Amino acid sequence: AVTLLDFERSGIDYSAAARRMLDDIREFATETKRNGQPLIEIPWVRTLMADRYVDCEVARLMAYNVAYMQSQDLIPTKEASMSKVFGSETVQRVTDASLDILGQYGTLGRDDKWAPLKGRVQEHWMNAFAGTIAAGTSEVQRNIIAGRGLGLPRG
Figure: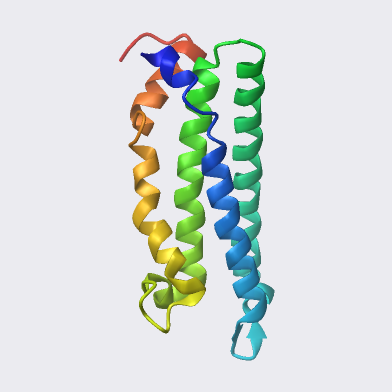
């Protein structure tokens, strides 16, 4: 069953979703001012976005590595698990950062006229946790990484 999941996907969907949200937030932060200053110029916003950008790039490269291994008929057991854990948790971190930047407006849904980004942040937040559960929880993935990556006994 684990080997089948290794080939289920590379995890690129997680990095793509996170990057899309980050790009949307960057555009919003560039266009939106708080106290006369664009959000993008506020130091904590820039730092938070830079940290999440690093996460997105690492998730993308991990997914590419899994896809490459699959193309070479290698079984990426620990690599697929690492990509899933990091990618799905990156989506959560980017969504949390988006809510930090948008404030309470980020919780508004698509039907609310005041919702920034047409309520997509709220939708992403509502769905972000599913990625850490579907196709093996993050805890299960960490057990696979511990056993097959580090050679640790089952706990």
